[in-house]
Image (cartoon, rainbow, N blue to C red; front, side, top):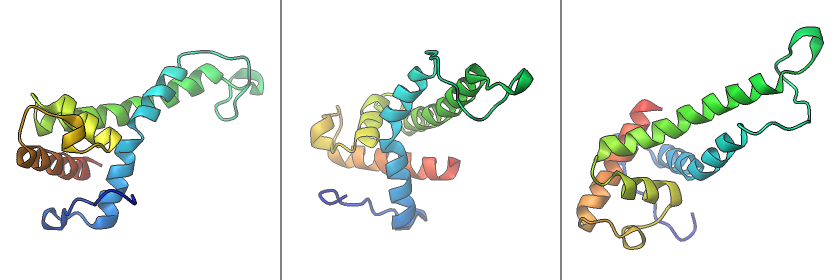
Length: 129
């Protein structure tokens, strides 16, 4: 994060290292959505892991498990953003999943309110994760 300042969440019991863990988890949101969509397409290659009858790999089951795990992570981020503020959640979601600032997101609220909602998001996410 060379050009981005860390949020100071020490007063909320979140260390700098924990904040960065949550921050980078949220930055993976777009990749998780793409990967989940990719789980719904079948391909001809065999995957290691779950084995069906006769020792053959069950690629469909493996992709279903991966899609379910990704879905849980995606839902966690989206629900936490909605809990922070139901009306401003699209802007909060965009800010935390892309790393954009208040100026770049342009939410219909002031900068102080937006920063407070972003702090609320990270404290809620820390409690859930």
